[in-house]
Image 1 (cartoon, helix red, strand yellow):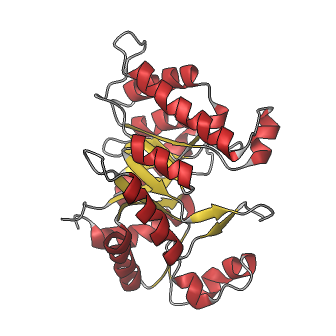
Image 2 (spheres, helix red, strand yellow; image 1 turned 60 degrees about the vertical axis):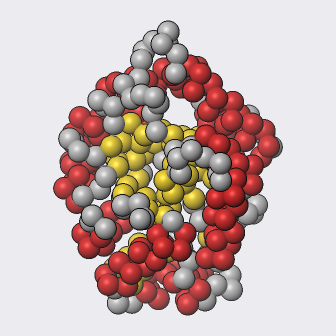
Length: 295
């Protein structure tokens, strides 16, 4: 039997207190299961924002999507994580990644390092968090036992291996880093993502319990005019046709019926049962969620 769907929204826009609480309540009303925040300079500070989100709502879990491990000292991060888990009543999910924006590290006065060094730091962070938060001597104590659910965002081989060994939730961005790209990322096609998921499954073959698989949907729109919605993407990726863009796993553009079918296909083909959308797509994707609730 396939896993039931879960749906998350990544709240990327900072807002004053009343507005922040209101949009968290709106996400809960729309049926989102997880309220998430990123970890970028210019965005909200993750843990205070999640505590506020939990106070404004009653049902959704809250999580980081994802913390940039390069910003964090593991010992100090353990204190933040345990405190946030306690203050949210055990509703926290911890998402971690290596970070992919060099400019943010430079702006913060933090080392960027090589890809290997960033993966090594993330691995040490995960291991140290497990050690500290699993200790009965650690103060403060987290609420959730045996541990707070861990999500790792991955694409490269070493990251997939780390994810396979440590993560409760394996998150795929369906994008890869490209030096010189305006955003640093370009979308993966379905065949490329097939290969990434297949490698992850091979690396995770000896797990006692399979991880939940997550996909970040970068573009979501319910529309009869997909060409208009996707024009900026076609301009950003030279040579990409409209037909190819519509087939990208991280793109969900079309009529409501088409989108419901696409989401079902994502779970059937790749195993993605936990789907995340960005805040600008929150209302549009709610139409699709309503059709899939309980499926």
